[in-house]
Length: 272
Image 1 (cartoon, rainbow, N blue to C red):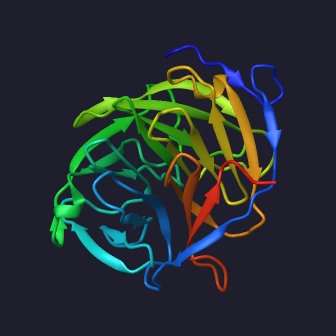
Image 2: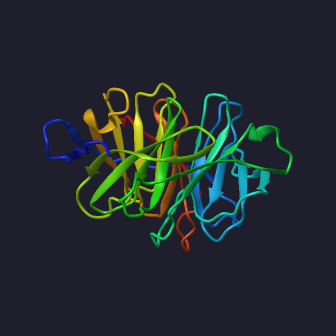
Image 3: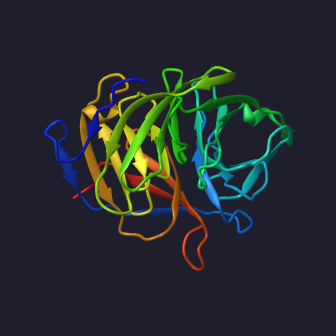
């Protein structure tokens, strides 16, 4: 097992900044998609791909910029045990993170590859990447992942000390590598989604109340550079994030009575 280093915001390796940001609504999410848990944009179109989490259909949906469903793909060979996040590669393939583990009873978690989703009519089969934690590690719940240099990086969902793991983008079964432990401090720091910019220089970590921005890191030492926290002036169950461009991210949230079920745009570099 690799040596772990516990990162906290109090140590001098991190330069901490705070600000307050505002979300702007891009579109409503259709009423029949009440538990959207991840979103992504691929290189092959401007569709916003979304999924729902446990208890929902095994489907991937492509939404246009008005929020209308223009693609509805049934993934026939898998079950939605707990789909939690989406990521993509430079070829425009889509990857579904079946990585949720709320009850800590899943030994094996999965990442499902959907090749060229824009070309699929209405159903497909997924290629499957399975992984488990190293021997002796207790099962963890994951909701956030992205793909970088042909490895998946997944962040466990915990209020205190959490782990970052690494899984190769190779079809088959793997044992994940634990890269580090980290602690974002304070309450309500559960990470619900993550993404990395196209140039590989900026990472965003989402939760319901804020987004953390990681920059100035080297290779995959994501917590070794600058960390900036941007709280939202908005309260909802935010579950998905992806980069729209270098300075804008798209955020989706679940439906909760009169709140949520929207696609939002958020600027990382806030204007004065």
